[in-house]
Amino acid sequence: MLACLDVAYKDDRAFAACIQFAHWTSDTSFRNAFAQTETAASYQSGAFYLRELPALSAVLAELAQPPQAIIVDGYVYLDRSGRPGLGARLYEALKGNVPIVGVAKTTLRDDDWSIPVLRGVSKAPLRVTAIGMDQAEAAAHVRAMAGAYRIPEMLKKVDRMARDFATRSAQPATLR
Image (cartoon, rainbow, N blue to C red):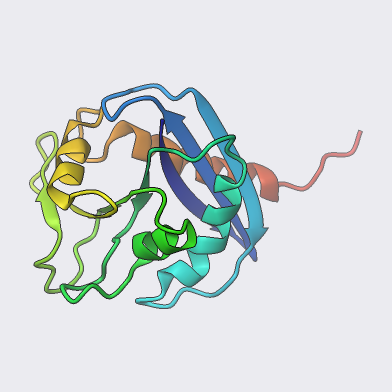
């Protein structure tokens, strides 16, 4: 079982979503999970994990068993020297028991450490980094993920789920 995770924000809350699916090439999920936390920190360049990690940890706690690998929207490492990004921090929080694959849509300046992955007809690569799994293997898995376009279908779905969860949860209750 694999899992894609993402977080959306509304006011002072973080809304995490998780899609669980069977194989790298799956186009359907078999279970979804959600968690809501207070926003732990404001956005800080290079310290994105401070904002995302509490919500990701909360949604992972909703799973009956740990996934075989987790895919996150972002980098595992922020530079060639191995400065930890969100993926590395999540790996550390999970005590190194679950491989993490980072799929970044935006290239960090001077990025020469990630593997560029072109999907569909896009000329803009995704940037793949990994920990607990060979980085070339992770890039091949991302390349093979379901979806005809640049962003793999499961990553698009989990992004949409997190945003929808934030929107629904932030709506005031209706009076009856």
